[in-house]
Every structure is written in structure tokens, then in C-alpha cells.
Image 1 (cartoon, rainbow, N blue to C red):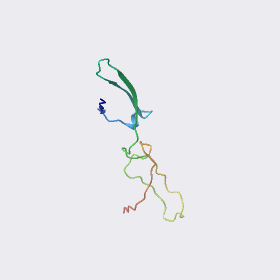
Image 2: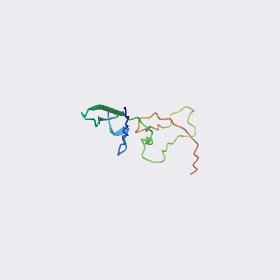
Image 3: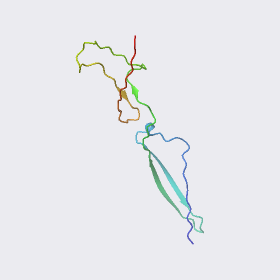
Image 4: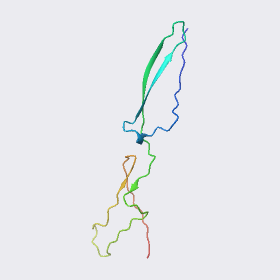
Length: 104
């Protein structure tokens, strides 16, 4: 008679992609039968952790608003400022512009 038994493995802490350089966790599993003459087998398991987008991009300026000034008679296409952000997850960043009129 063949009896199949399954083992479920639960990790007791969050597996963080960013905290391990190799992005993987390894462990061994041993299975033992309860026959008159006991036998066992062993397998190595490798969990490859995939990245999720769990961190927001960070701008190089530490202020909430980045301020740049330009003269009203400046030619179209002139350099105004540089805005740069870095994503701690390593994801590609897309920049979007929206109007924000501020009257002084």
C-alpha cells in the first residue's frame, strides 16, 4: 500500500528581496518513513525571492517642492532645472508632469 504525505512549509518572517544579495533562501527537507527498517531521503530547496514594488522613489532634493526660476523672456527649449529620483527597489522610474500654478 502506498501512502502519500505532504509537508507544508511556512516562513515565520517576511522574505525581503532587498535584504539579501543573492535573492534566495535555502533549506533542507528530510523525509523518514516508519517501516520496520526505517529509510529516509533528503532534498535541498532553494526559494528565489522576486521583487515587489514596496518602496517609493526618492527625489535627490530633500524638500517637498523643488523650486526653479526662469526669466519670462527666456527662449523656448532653454535649460530650466534637473529633477532626479531613485527607486530603492531598482524599478524603472517614469516622470509625469502636472500644472501647479502658484501666485506670489
